[in-house]
Image (cartoon, rainbow, N blue to C red; front, side):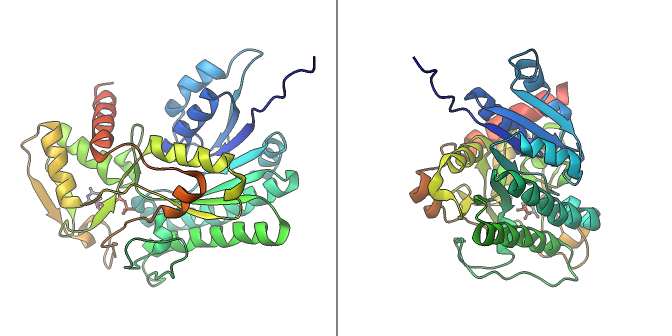
Length: 337
Ligand code: UDP
């Protein structure tokens, strides 16, 4: 009898030691696929994937490998890409704080890094899933954001918009590889993804406010607190990425991946205080003090997820309350350890 066909796949995950990459690696390994991670540990942490090395990375049946390197190291990237069926490209400069503090490195990582990954994928015709961001909607005020919307971004004199522009270049480049070289490409735009292992170090509001509440410090709300976001549990984001990876219909498409419960940052802070059981106060910090002079924020950021829903049948399953419960538990564990 012929051996059953092996349907498992080998994925290369760039930025796989980061917050989202480590959850994604875990999900792929759990379902039986093989994973190679390349990460330079600039914002990723070995701690995020240590358990995967121990569980899946040892012995002759090993299905997990980890290269500490930059995606701009062409030789290494080429070798790793040659061994994979598909590449999930998550490596990027993340977080508003980092973009403002290290603008040159952020733009270069996003633009040159993606170019290198697309070139490597093309040499081996590996399918590529490119992580993009809701930042590409800039300060547009059509709610909710649809993938085909026109985009309004701010002046080049305001550093924040460098991130949007660099990720837009990534999207243009990836779509050009699909249209002119038939490289199978899928783009997903992540909206405010949150959960265990995310750090507040690069600005992300939920782990920052939770850490402040647990440490008994006042919660810092920037601006007047009326700006809104829709948060998505990382487990839901991973489920969406897996659906997209498995769907031939998704190829050549751009998809919003986001949560649907819109809330203001002020009410988020109030919910966090109540859930942590803290009596601390909420303080307002002007944007120019929190970031830099002339900083521009988005007033509302809400995704339209109908394209993803129709193409792969995905829906977010976790509520904001689930997100806060899991993140509070994780931050508590981290602060104790
Ligand atoms: N924010 C805040 N306090 C903080 C960190 C962030 O009020 O300590 C605000 C930030 O100005 C933005 C929102 O929370 O309006 C979400 O910020 P984050 O950096 O998490 O993501 P963004 O949506 O800006 O990419």
